[in-house]
Image 1 (cartoon, rainbow, N blue to C red):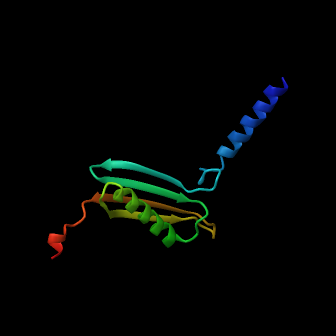
Image 2: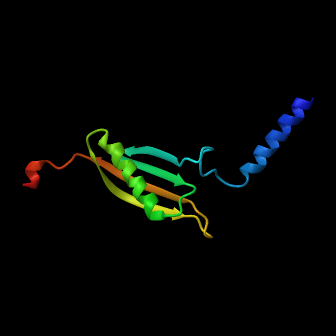
Image 3: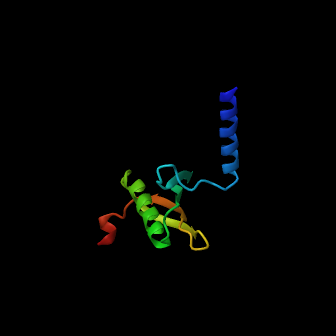
Length: 112
């Protein structure tokens, strides 16, 4: 009986905390990053950084991470679309959404 009461209390606490809104970070405090394939070489990456108050730094970090993703296949990153939203009322937290394309690097013969 006591275990059932404890379990019910735990479920009630979880249910009440779910009403406070989405969780912006994992328990370790790391950013929550999702990336999905759109089509062809086009990808969409979303980075939620709950403790970041500097939108430019969050934007630059997302672009750097996307570039690293493309470089694993020997390609470069071409940004297509980007949006940044910052928490209101002087609270830290930034969400960056970046749509990008992995492209072949320009050949040296074109550059000459």
